Length: 179
Image 1 (cartoon, helix red, strand yellow):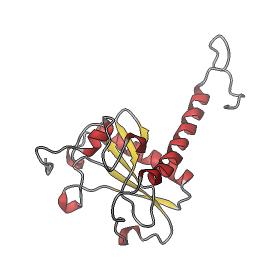
Image 2 (tube, rainbow, N blue to C red):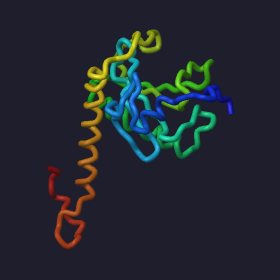
Image 3 (spheres, helix red, strand yellow):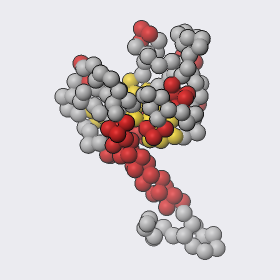
């Protein structure tokens, strides 16, 4: 339904999800991956909003119209997680999301994706254009590492809360602190 993807389209997001590298992204850019969705630091930035992230379904779906509900839910769960992580690590004052469908809607990659932008007071995100070219990997990875570290800490805390600290299988252990 409402497809614009060329017949011989080589999807850069599918390549990334399969472990491949493109001039725009590498697996090193991935900040979070779940069963159905993946987030990675974008290679195209706006002047006052560095470190923006793209969240994509792990299966190829061109746009919102054909996106199965389970993938839509998974993508937006990851969008929320990334937004919380940005607020916790970037020092931003807020977060904006946007999503584009079809050429008239400014969609440029034919794989459904949601942009997550860190926001700062007076940053003029909607009045500005993206910076020219691709952001160097080393600059992207500064933000990638911040988000990855956040998710690693969150994962360790979740593991600690579910840990069984006592021999013999008792669920007791709530008085222990994580390492």
